[in-house]
Image (cartoon, rainbow, N blue to C red; front, side, top):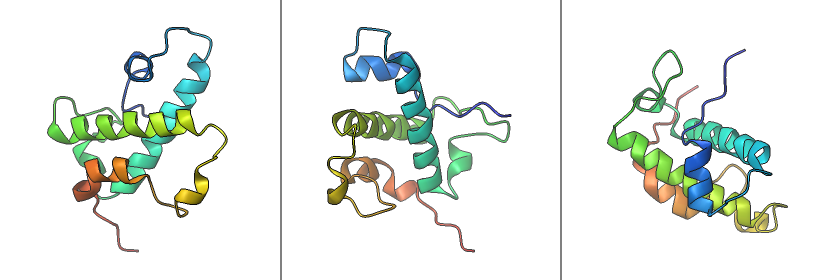
Length: 112
C-alpha cells in the first residue's frame, strides 16, 4: 500500500496552527493526508506539476509552494470547523474561496 501524500510536514502544519503539544499529532496527520488528497484531486490534470510518477513531491517549484499555502489555509479552516459547523457555507465538492484563489489556475479538469 502506498504511503499517503502529505503536501506539508506535520511540523509545518503545527507551526501554522500554532500547536505546541504532540497529543493531536495522529489527528493532524490524517487531516494533512486528507487535505492533500483533496487539493491534488482539485487540480486534476496538473498533478504532475506537484508529484512525480513515484508519488514524491517535486520540490522547490512555484506550484508546490502555492499548494502548500493552500493546504495550510485549508487546515486552518478544518481546525476551526472540526464538526463541519460551516458546512452550509460551501456547496458539496467545493473548497473555501481562500484555498481556491491560491491554486485555481492550476486546475485542469479531466474530461471523461
